[in-house]
Length: 385
Image 1 (cartoon, helix red, strand yellow):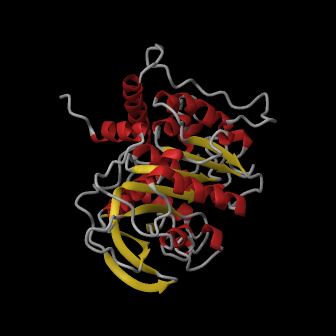
Image 2: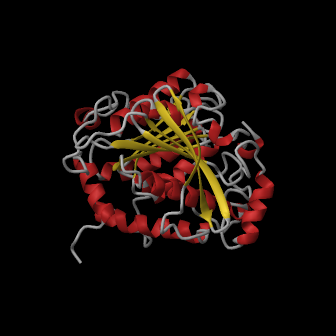
């Protein structure tokens, strides 16, 4: 693991999504299934066969494992017993996190102008390198990948996936399958399966070929001294999702988020703060604030070490309920040590009914994505997206 990642009465959009997810019905009406899609409605209702396995405590869980504050208690200490009461508490928790994270660097509307820099075709996929402004004067690049075959009139739209890269110098070239190990080329992998994928570059890379974490974090915080590096990462993930759902062939009701290591950290925040994310996979990010260097200036900063900091990431994990969230560990950044976070979120998920689509799979093979993890990722996304 790198140094960067070492340690009225009308329903709101969210209420509507919660109701439909809990009931197991389709959000988009009259959608149908596209030819070659990875899953059907029956598969999504059935879910993965190993769900109970990833909701079982590790046998060798340490007696001194992290104790997290219960979530189903309101600000006055009263028990929360209904979805409506939890939704109120959820808003309070997310508001507290927003206050800590600070202001976003820019508005996200209207959508920025998108420039296509290059494009190529790889194994039946159109891969475009695009550029747009994440904030005024600050350009970012991303890969946008989709199947070559266009949708025909009346054909269902495609699911979408936001892919957040890990700490490698070649940044977005990794998930787009241009450079790097194939098991982390999530964007290319899922575009080949009928998805549209966007792979945005993290702000710590001034270009697509070399990271400059300290320099870029300092530059961002000089521009936005009341913000945090994690807020910039969240803003960029939200903006990438805006661009993804604006694509004419993307089904906005079937959006996923996936990332490994640095990208896994971003997935946790993306899923919590963006109700459009229906399925999330976070691989080896270190979910606990003490599990990796969350106190770095490019993440949450040194304030998380102060006694007055009382927030924790089980709050964000629970805020994702009832949407599907798979935490992958290898006993490096995540693993058995991460179980208390799943345990704390499960009662919230169960408020919405069965099944509770959250769990921890520990492959015990370090800071990697081994074949067994690839299989679990494939099955999780196929089952719930």
